[in-house]
Length: 220
Image 1 (cartoon, helix red, strand yellow):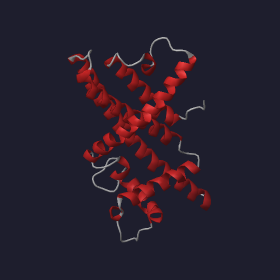
Image 2 (spheres, rainbow, N blue to C red):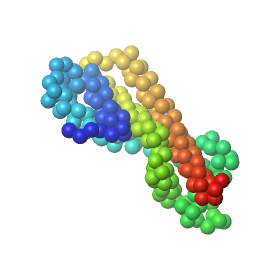
Image 3 (cartoon, rainbow, N blue to C red):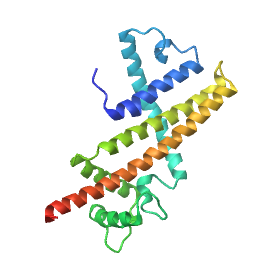
Image 4 (cartoon, helix red, strand yellow):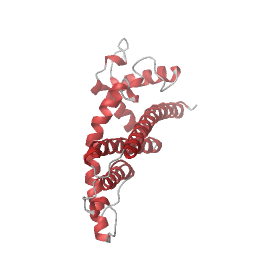
């Protein structure tokens, strides 16, 4: 079995495994192998990992829906905030500098605004900015934030699933509903935090990389 990379482990495998374990507590009729508990052989553990990986992908599918609704209520994802006012992602000077350096990537005329770009066009610009930073070998912190963001998005979706299953659980209780509810709120708050960190780090590294390259080219 191949090794999982950081995002696959944090964003897919962990949410899948934890959700299966929680569902096992809520629905005791689920086989122990699916829950990842009890006496499991090495082969059984391998099967559970595969099931958790598959479950993680399904949960992240639900997480995409959670993400879409959550950020729509926030006025868009953090990487979109610099196109509107007011925003707290970057300082005013950084935003002005970023806009001037993004124009060549977005290919918009000087008299046009970044708000004139469609959402898909803006996504293309941010992906190109990330590719530039990654090519320079400076995407380490960005990838960590992205992995943890994926973890919290997956946990949020998995906890929502558990809350939906709770009314049908023979072990349901008010206390359990409260714990799941609090954990869901915390996971969403952490998802928001890592999303902001991702957007801020992406643009900061892009600005720093661009400044370094210009400095090297001019002998500064």
